[in-house]
Amino acid sequence: MSLPLRLTGLLIVVLVLGGCASLETRESAADAYEEETYDPFEPFNRAMFAFNEKFDQWLLKPVAIGYDWILPGPVKSGVGNFFSNLFQPAVAVNDLLQGKPKESASDVGRFVVNSTVGILGFIDVAKSIGLEPRDEDWGQTFAVWGVGEGPYFVWPFIGSRYLRDTVGWGFDWISRPETHIADPFTSWGLVSLNYVDVRARLLPAEKVLNQAAGEDKYIFIREAYRQRRRNLIYDGNPPKPKFFEDEPAQNTSTKPSVNGAPAVEGSKPSVVEPSPDVPADQ
Image (cartoon, rainbow, N blue to C red; front, side, top):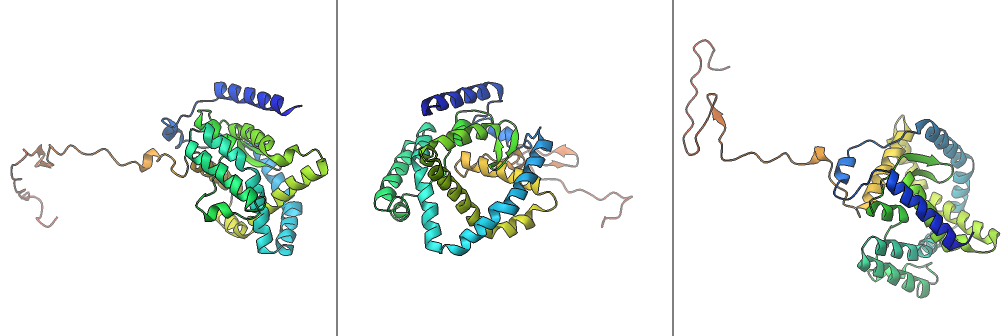
């Protein structure tokens, strides 16, 4: 199937998703912020979570450990920079679709500088001249457009995704140049190298994650994913939950009551005499 047909098919899914799911605009998202993650398929998700844990334990993690041990630090940094640069045009497109032309122009500048002076992106020269990297994807764009996040899923190999982000991941996949290489060995080799590189960079945080997760790692990962996605969608400034909002200001025109009756503004409060039946020190 050609790329335009795949994009059209995924776009139709997004439109259906937008019609079926509750709309979550930036004005109303503060209410949804307090809701728990919508997880109607929890038994399936827990089974997939266990599968992914075993896959990581038996295959992905050992490969990542070997990768981390064999390659020197500068080479690993270069590999990460290379794959980040490959996705940079998609980041620029998503910034533009989210109504951020200035950031989109910066993304294009990063791609041009790193692809040339940075030797195909292996060296992040753009960051040294003030063109900071940005993390934008199609799931974030759909959220800005008002598409509801939908139910939570844990997919084999790719992990946590809302229904909206699942469709977004499909767009992200076909937005990556390495997925369009004609030679399947080269294409899947690059895709696999990218996943191993990402897993290797997560190795130092694994012990901290296991300690923080407590007894139910599934719940911890689910809620951490929710918080991270909201943080990305709102560019690091998500709406404040209602239970953190300041209480309404009190009416300062009315003074505190004295002896059970409101005091008149400007008047001095009367002294409360102790009851003869109650000791004065109580």
